[in-house]
Amino acid sequence: MRLRHLLIVFFCASLTAGPVMAASKEETRVQDATDVVDQLLRIPEQGVPSALLSRAYAVAVIPRVIKVGFGLGARYGKGIMVVRQDDNSWSNPAFVKITGGSFGFQAGAQSTDIILVFKTRSGVDGITQGKLTLGADASIAAGPVGRSAAAATDMTFKSEVYSYSRSRGLFAGVALEGAGVTMDRKANAAFYGSAQITPEQIFASSGNAAPQAANQFVQVLSAQTQRLPMRPAAAANASGSRDAQPQDQGRSEVRTYGMANNPEDELRD
Image 1 (cartoon, rainbow, N blue to C red):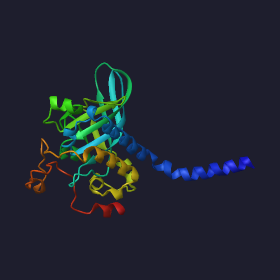
Image 2: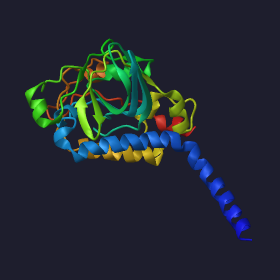
Image 3: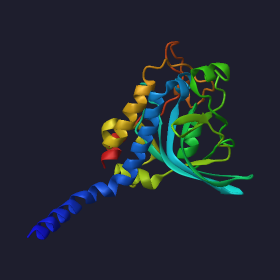
Image 4: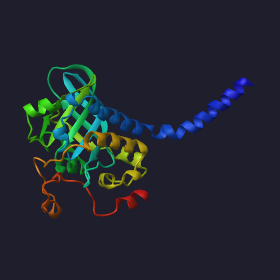
């Protein structure tokens, strides 16, 4: 009798766990990215400089990027990306992938968390339209770490993309020339429940159009950036007459991804 009761309990638990497991792959990726950003709050003196985040147009977080090499190296990882909206808030996340190779003597394998800080819209457009090759399609530099490092090195932040790695809890600049960043459209479709959803719709939609895991990531990133003073981007993008309009001195000149249409209607279809 007791065995029968245990079997019934196990069967019911399996039925209720099914839907959770079906969505856990994308949700786990968002949760892992949230944990990486949370570390920025815990060690501000050893993380991405606030002066750089204040100029960021977009941020990509790619947890557990695997790099293996036995003479010829390879790098692969999956993460998420958000862009800055007109009101200085962050968009819903879109899923991205990073791939790349390297030459030279190397052996073994390692896993690191990667953060990419995009200064301009052009790099993000390259990703949404197909593929962005870092160093070829957009200039990239290993990002300075901490406030003092930023002040001593490159306060102008002239590159379009800055890259960071996190290993053993510490952040450091990392060279990613030649790595390619693409959209993970299959993951976007699974997470948002629509095979037709586009990155532009995701970036332009409101928070209530996304699962709770996405909202948690945005909240943690906002806690890191919402109180930062907005400063003009070092390399402004000319993206139409809207960007050419004069702006008040107190407002940011970072280009945003706002859409003229109402994407929430398409998300609900």
